[in-house]
Amino acid sequence: MPELESSTSWPALRRFLYTREPVNPPIAAPRARLVPGLVGRADVELVVVSNPETPDRTLAIKGLGSSPLPWLVESARLLERMGATDLAYPCNTAHYFLHRATSEDLTLRAPLVDMIHETVAAVAAAGLSRIGLLATTGTISTGLYQDAFEARGVSVVVPEQVPGRPEGPDLDGEGRVAPDAYARHGASPGRALDRPGLGALVSFLVDLLGEQEGLVMETVRGALGVKAGYTAGVPVQLAAEAGRRLVARGAQALVLGCTELPLVFTGRSATLEGRDVPLVDPTAVVAERLRARPGPHGIAGGLGPEATIDLLVKMGAPREFTDLLYDILRATVAELGARRDQDHLKLFAIAGPDIVGAARRLAGAGAGFLVLTRDAAGDERAVEAATGLPVVVDRADRQAGVEVVRRAVAVPATP
Image (cartoon, rainbow, N blue to C red; front, side, top):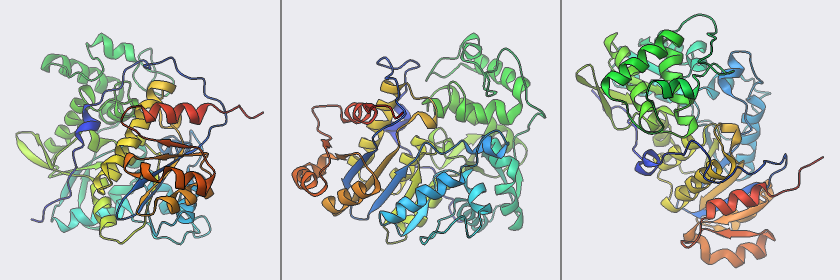
């Protein structure tokens, strides 16, 4: 059987645990912010628009929020303006809206490397007949993957869901389990529970919310989940339990159909139900397809900041570039108390061979200031002269991420 696409480990991302409280008192966020434009060196050009203003995709599918399509299109058009010759969205659920958009909605020139189609093709080529799908509730409810797999003769098993919208004192306004409910079960940020403790927590979550919301969605967006900044401890255990249950129902492999899941399910396989179960990482599939093209590659990100960086890492982006993005992500949590996608900074970034040319394109796209990676520091004066914008350089002797965040938010609020 051909080898399946696998998750690529990023130790720095897995090791880092966000504190539950900001390191510094959060800066009051004004309504206007400067957009940072990051410039780095790379042989094959990577163009990134990270737009966390994009509305929540799952809430939109449930009819509880705005459609993200206008924001998805805006990001793609910006990428085209900055020179991208192909496009990818590091978000499975976003493809629901992309697949249903008309030609009038998506007036784009650059082709889309479709995460759903490419993943289904990879699984079908591996000769599998039954897979387990771990994904957001929005993705599962649309049948986005199920329809595509079944058209290729592959059956799909998904976590059990409970009907209706559970309510109760242990849930917050968005249906997530409250932090104090985790604390009552001995769960704390970044730390794994022992077997009895995990069993009690799993029983509580599944009884309250069902497998899909209680295990998968709490892994993704729960108080101790990936979108809250945790990639170790409880979310790893909850994801493994969700996967184990699908394997017990006959799944031959697991598709990690949410871009946060490869951050807790790492490696080529997972040991579940006493055997090694292949993991299919759609982010890795897309990265491989992009690497086979000449570029410049456009990444429409911000639909989960960690997932955007994860895709860039899997594409082989330079370490200086991804480290700087990660430093800004970490500083956004520390300085702004960011906990949701929408709390992060909008930013543009280009890594390529022409530093000054990239800086000009970022300025033209609306960057309010520019940030250079350490290996691009020698072009600082040329960039300033070419763009007229302030420049921050990521030097070893200072925290560039903190400086970037503070510069971005220190803008008078618009009336």
